[in-house]
Length: 86
Image 1 (cartoon, rainbow, N blue to C red):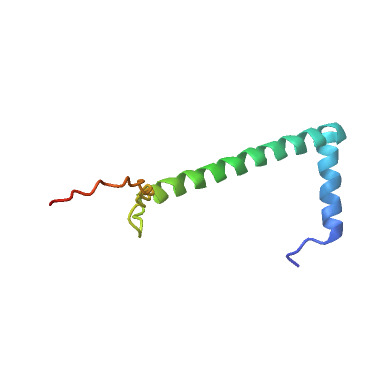
Image 2 (cartoon, rainbow, N blue to C red):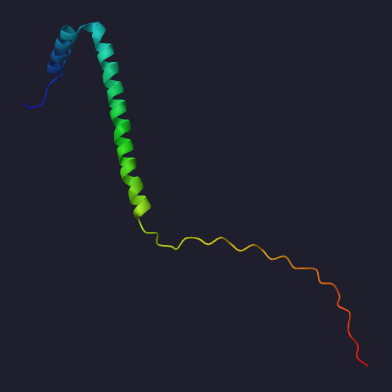
């Protein structure tokens, strides 16, 4: 008995159309859609703002990565004159 039957919904729809008129209903629906989109984006932005400080303050389990040392190229060796002692 608590749920509305399809006839109840039809009566509610007819009353809404009579009260607001068929010209104002699309504008009202468009405005409601815009409002919901703005609300959704603001909620998402608030969640992102809450997540950012937590990520910045969380200690990292690994130490910061050290840059890899530059590869050492072998130097061409020039032959050294041998010193002969007689």
